[in-house]
Length: 447
Ligand code: UDX
Ligand code: UDX
Image 1 (cartoon, rainbow, N blue to C red):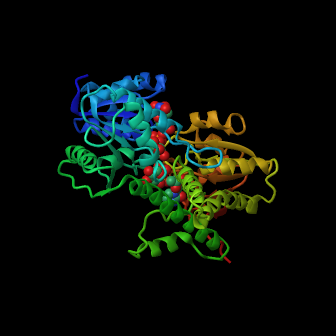
Image 2: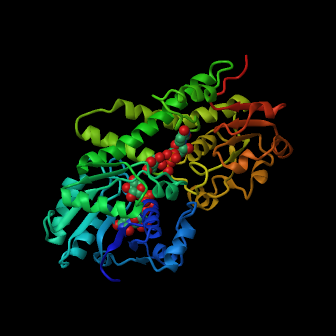
Image 3: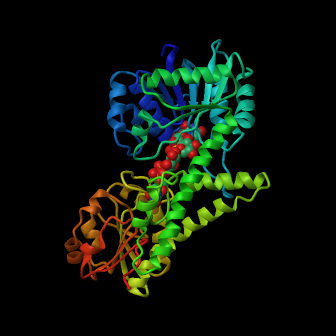
């Protein structure tokens, strides 16, 4: 492929790398996508994304038709682009601290690839990394492997990503902000120019700062959002214990206060997904390494873990002992419109149900394949909601899928062994469930 300032390389084609690259391709940028996973590369060449994300497949296919995306396992090919994004995963070590192995390896590969290149290259760290990583870890690895010094010939930026699964493409097409932490003016200018080229007339607020502050912004963002979820869940659990209190109305009212705002106030079974838990743990571990105990963040995480117990306790309130009772779990994905089950609350709830001796049947419109891999034969995975409900002593609504909103009370009643419902997502209305034993998160029972 011709070297070109309108070509961008990505190392790591997970959620962040692939969605960002595909959106850039839709804006006319040529993409070289690198990943170590050969099967993933083969599939991508056929236009098949490795995960479900609305709009992604059609955009990927369109980009391939226009020959705007190339996929390879050969990292040396990143040299064909001026800007090279590092988007490999940053998993947790056993103690919760961040594992930078993939970031270091990717940086090394990029450095080696550009070592002999006479042109200016900008390396952009988009993976979520703890404050100081770009300056103190990536920079030395990059300089050593490229045998170049950062500066006039080699640029380096941190450019965190805030996309949420299920709305990754939409969010990337019109982001609420761009954060650019650059080591020097040339790096920041080069990345700003690339984004201006992509967003053209769309004015996206851009924060220009140093790499360490940029990295901190990403953690602060997830820490705040996770804190909101644990806070509203705490209020929900209090509502639960007060006759007639309803967290939905509480959330609606406080959300009207502009100082609070309406989003991330939905009580539920606890947050899941690949980021909140991982990033909070990384931030907690990072803080401790700086001799600071972030008690608020540890409480947010603990509240989240315990939320699963709160949900299971609702089913115990309906059934007494769960031993040998059949529980139908509707929804396994960590939120709707995704097949992702990483850190899903459903896993914590199922674990606890099983510990209590329950027999679990489960259904999810999209995550069954992942569920089979993760849960094996611990639960009975069913092909649809009705078969999941069949013979159940209690149903727990775990994920807020639209499909479950459409279920009628009669669907439950005709299938279940006993009419016991726990709505962990508040997608049903108690008034519709006359004749049922009905409990929902954050809904105090009438006195
Ligand atoms: C992203 C960010 O990169 C991560 O830092 C953030 O915390 C969460 O979002 P994500 O895109 O979800 O991670 O990661 P994942 O879906 O695990 O994909 C990472 C990709 O990088 C995989 O396709 C993997 O095969 C690839 N990879 C990993 C490489 O190409 N090289 C490696 O050395 C390691
Ligand atoms: C999150 C951040 O939103 C995103 O900016 C970051 O880049 C990655 O992490 P994601 O994990 O895809 O994105 O999902 P998100 O929509 O934020 O939801 C996270 C979890 O919180 C889900 O389990 C969701 O069900 C839960 N949640 C969210 C609630 O329980 N209540 C809410 O009001 C909002």
